Image (cartoon, rainbow over all chains, first blue to last red; front, top):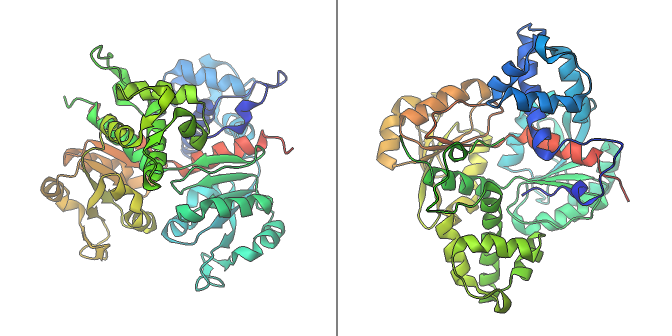
Length: 223
Length: 223
């Protein structure tokens, strides 16, 4: 469902890049590690981390090799160093400014979701084509009309965009965001977007998720 | 991020089961095919389908082998037959009753999302622990207290559950849903759930999606 624009390019031998699956697991480790550090635990083993997210310690150690030299597996990894290394590899050791288009219920849920800011994703700009919403303030941010997209995105330096618009306007909104300088999009609309190669896309299609779930349920025997 | 409980079981030689990736692509084909049929096009080629979702026609033909014998690749597949076969394989040639727990903004967005019902997922029951929400009607459905979960889920025959609750209550709510008879869960809370083997889980973690996007953007050169 996701399009990894990078996968079409030749691999750079100078850097060993983790796969999408590894990147996903690094995110999960990070969440666990922050909890572990919050409890005051300064060392963590691959076994602990693996158990916490339900995978083998072999896989954990393999993933951790992407983070550079972080001590010996036998005696555990320093929690703080692991966190810092994962944040660096995931490129979230910085803040990302995010524009959100389509100010409906989904947008309100996204705006109130505390996890984004905790991980360095700050929603800085809102847009909606509905004149009755333009000018409204939602969670402290003003809703701008689409005509101001280029100007507001330049001013707020938004690099990522969240598309919470209906399917029939998703492509046009995506094009506008890209023209305004956004380099990565999360699309919540159930429609396939066509984007230039330099723009990254993550599609969050809830119907596809439900279909996968239904398929699993149907193929899992009740004990 | 997803846990496929089925993958831990020995393969059944009597049925060749499509992978999770194939299941995801079948969902995307289905969406395209419904659009194609809506335009009155009764035959479709693997090339058309592949172009529509940005993959090769070889992959499309490979995926279509899971659907049984559907005519010859050279002359195109009958659109209606493809749709019916995909719905059958995905187990959405029936309706699935869905319970939704946590009636906040995300829940309201999910309730208004037309795509679920179009694909046979009907939200039939709402639950919230907040007494001020209990008894309220949202999109025509009454909000029930958690104590009534077993009773309401039995009455509505809900098989799937959507968890739109805060992280710190997600595990308890998941346990209640499973005890009430739900067999598959979509978890929107950024927390890893532990569930019995007969329960399927799809995790929709928006922060992980944003982290993957940031990683891609960081590793994609602007032309």
